[in-house]
Image 1 (cartoon, rainbow, N blue to C red):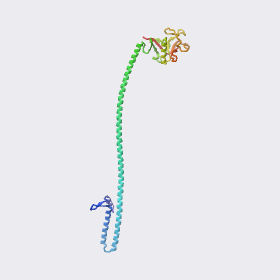
Image 2: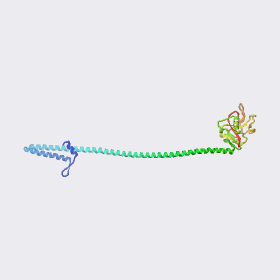
Image 3: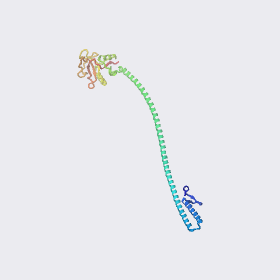
Image 4: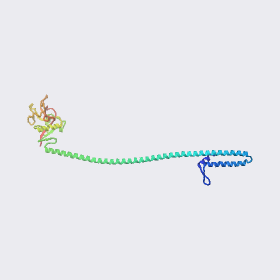
Length: 313
């Protein structure tokens, strides 16, 4: 059988008889070769009617040939069927693998689409939050600006109120601004105006006089306590007061010509008049442990802070 016959049989492995019955590929091959053998036998019978021995041998050979051809046809048909089945199996396997890959790709594509949707939703949410946050920041900025304006207005009002308070205190106490009232007197401590400015005793007295006052005269205990506590809070060293023994050594006289007779306000061991030029002017020094012992004699040329006193208006 030729390759074209095998291919034709493979292309149409089953056919039908006239009455509609199916005929397989092997049955068709058998019928072909049997019919061929019968025809040959008939022809040889016609051809060799003259010798019985020779005819039998020819018939035997033809029969064997038919059987051999039949076996070869059956083997070829079986091989064609196997090749067909293997081809179908290979094709089916490849198709199955391809379908699996397509399903996998489709699943991945669905996951990608889902992830894309989720990312898009997340981005929209972030943008909305950003917009809301921006609006809140703008609102807070407006509120802060309003607060700043209110604070500036309050500061201006505070300045005006402080100015009014100072004016009222000055009017009520009869003391200038920056002076501290006590009973009927006003006191000016130079440290409050110029913390780093210091002068000698004479220059300090001139400054007090330029203010309509003079160096302080401490002549009663309440005044001593007031001066002591005030300079103690300032922690600014020594302050000149209006007390001196320039005219008579050892005789301490206030600038109002009142002689000092109280020794309890002097620090221990003072006045001692030490030094080459002597110590003829009095000063007060903060003494937290002994607030009554604050006075000390010093050289009038030394520079330090001072205290002025004037009568309140």
